Length: 292
Image (tube, rainbow, N blue to C red):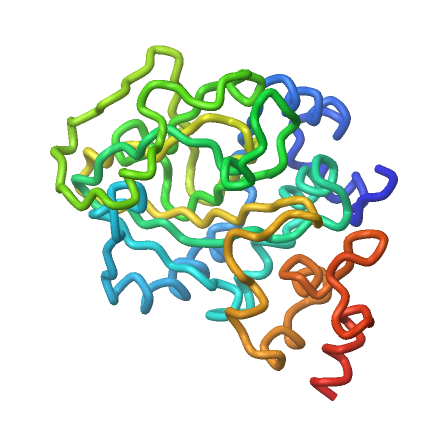
């Protein structure tokens, strides 16, 4: 796997007997892949425990898109160093680098906790913020770590397989600017745009879904009696503006304490030939000087 930071043998245990080239061909065809039981149970529990203080604050989403019965935790790498393990895990990182290049960046990393009664999101695709009309290649890779099991009734992410190849920039029920201002509580069964071609990404805790940035999807409705928690790191090309200003979420000292690949992903890196320099220097040199 020339040009990638992860040797293929590191990810083979999760590929179900496929080579990386074969798994990537499936990814290119379907727009998504699901890998079950990637994280050991103890790691899942550590992630859940680290998120607990922020979830206990019970800060609800600000609009219908974020989820008025959901909690979202942002700036995760500044809150607990080990969240970087999810971002730099060799399995999702290999697919991100293969699609976006070795200079790819972490565009967003957040936890989403859907409470019972949460409604479906509007349909959307994650690299839409770049505002490049379709048809085009995907300019993002989104990943979904199941910290709780994702089930038929607890709000598992709904996806439209193959939709990453669709030429249209909008579909019925797609997110609109108004969705980011809508604060009206809806009934859990209120679904403005059900689709017969949608499938739910059902998977046990510790599993991973990887999707193309152009894949149409949405958060599902939680009709269960328990919350549903995921962590979703999202990657973009090195030339793109990140959704979350990662460098501003933490101090220089916090950044210096991260593993090197995590530092590169949040922006202490260069997209060739020299995008991202600081005062004429590679940001790693500035970080080393500042944290010395």
